[in-house]
Image 1 (cartoon, rainbow, N blue to C red):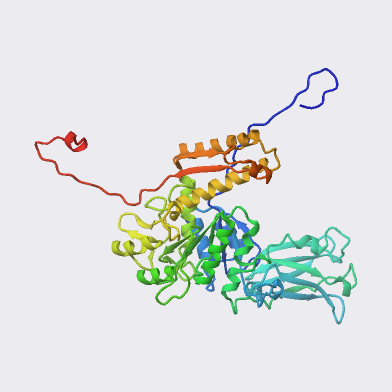
Image 2 (cartoon, rainbow, N blue to C red):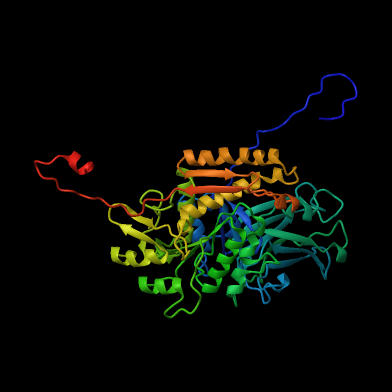
Length: 513
């Protein structure tokens, strides 16, 4: 109660309505080689059309575009993309080998025209060599202004009208083009040419000199550097990412790095795949690091691996092509979450059905699936009546526990992140029973809602004198225990057919004495 100095009515408000907010469960983060787009600067795309505008179409050097298309085709909606290229020193961003296409435009008025305007492709890559710019006279002030038309593959994609080289006016070329164009940036060379009358020479000029920066690509370029936020570490600032994939990158070093990254975050899963065209026994060797493989076995509940690769009709060649399954798998995760809840297994003939796949790199038999699944390899299987389906949902955790299933791991990530983010109001509150009860009031309804929807068999929340001893209070530590019994999935269905004698009764079978 405040210090009241005179009689009167004093209104106070106490808010007990805190609740656990909903969070994303199926936003994916893909890392790989793309035709264009910013390098090691994550961008959000929400459709295949948007991906093409930002990152270009399919390229032979990587599978990122194929995975993005499969993600959206199979129900994905939120995709964070990180384009990578080669660094001679991964710890130094200035050593990037990729280069933008560029063209220096000359002034139009003098006999020995100086440079007047540099035009660069908006990001690195040979794609920029397909760009050209056309300079024309402006329509409002032809003596001092000019138009700039941008072409890609000879087709007009952008037009910027009535531009000026005068930095003091609103239509200064850099102000009108930079951060507005999806294809180019410009840099005035006004320090070497007289302003404002100078303008680039009329005509069309092609950009050139672009480099994709793929020569020398190594595992380190995909893994990246934590200090520089490159590779998988580019997603450090994207809290919403729940699924991480490096489509087609099956190096053991990269997979181990992806597992370590997801375990460090504790809020996302790595979706990996076996190398292309392995037979089942070799796939088991790859997962365990045995046979021809010498790496350590993959072991984590924050990762899952899928086999085999998918066969599609290549949009570029119209021929059959094998592509990694991680994009389609992440899309199925998203579709499962949209149709049901995060604790439902993203597998089976409904939620696990893979769209736009013609076949598989290897069609497994029942016996082969009996070998693969106990080793933590999730098979993508083809059935005559239901098509191609994800037929497994194990994590890569070697020790049997509830967390060796994808649905339980994702449920735990969802609960842990949602409750943790919503419990920040407790920090710096008095360490007393009132605060303990406030935390319980926050958590209980959230878990009850999950239980009612089938995600938990039961739960209990403890935050009292037992969890918060005098020693904890003296160290300013508030301890809350959340006990949960996560729902399991029915993966092994046994149908028992029992023959009963004609004179017998079913009651004798159902209720034996």
